[in-house]
Amino acid sequence: MATTQRLNHSTKVIVTAALTGAVTTKQNNPHLPTQPKEIAEAALRCYEAGAAMVHIHVRDDDDSASMRFDKFEETVRLIRDTGCPVLLNLTSSGGQGFSWEERIRPFKELKPELASFDAGTMNWLNSVVFMNEPKFLELCGQEMIAANVKPEIEIFDMGMLNTAKYYLKTGVLQAPAHFQLCLGAPGGMEATTENLLYLVNHLPEDCTWSTFGIGRGANEITLAALALGGNIRVGLEDNVYYNKGVLAEGSEQFIGRVKRVAAEFGKELATPDEARAILGLSRC
Ligand code: ZN
Image (cartoon, rainbow, N blue to C red):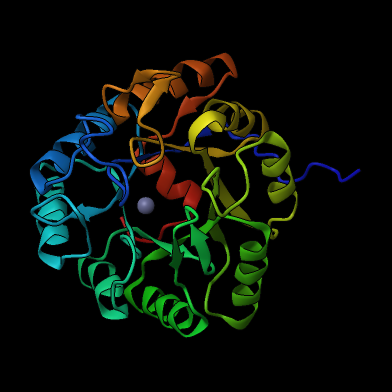
């Protein structure tokens, strides 16, 4: 049996709030923020609830999935203008069918602390191909290095982890890497403790990691992450229900739960500055 590695004995847990995503709709949950002002307000509420980082997608005027630069620009400005120190993590996918330029421009020009880097192509939700072809990933990684934006490497299955390790070797990604282990998306690995443990045991040395579960396995993954010393993502992008049949009142509600359970483990939620130190971010 594999030895469990990379136990993090830090008493701090970085919570990332995934506010909007590309798939969830207001019909799924009316609290979903979709326009810049709503997203910025949700980001502030999540920061006040204990999130150190917010993961941001934007939507078009009709709330459909979008990579519109002006929407990112407005959202980032609204958050930064408040002086809120929460770390910003912009998506580099935003949905399906966007051009490489549309996917790269937001992090390249707005320079968030982090941006997502999806380490492979997959059949997304058994409906469409989520394209992340090698040439795009090479360009994306190089642009993140040039912009001094740390990639949050999204891993949906074991093959993607191997791909990320390949890019760490070739220099498309740089150590220490930060991983987001995304479990429970149809087309990827299921949200189970067994799968999380497997991925954690195969992470490269010298990295940090966070995780979340979509759907039924969400709470299980939160508890397993705390037990394994990981960081945690929550929010309406990943789950619209707080509990079975009970709609969440906002992403901040999930943060309250993580904070309470973390306290039972003797842990506290990291502040943005503590998260910067844990993630080795050179910028402040
Ligand atoms: Zn996302």
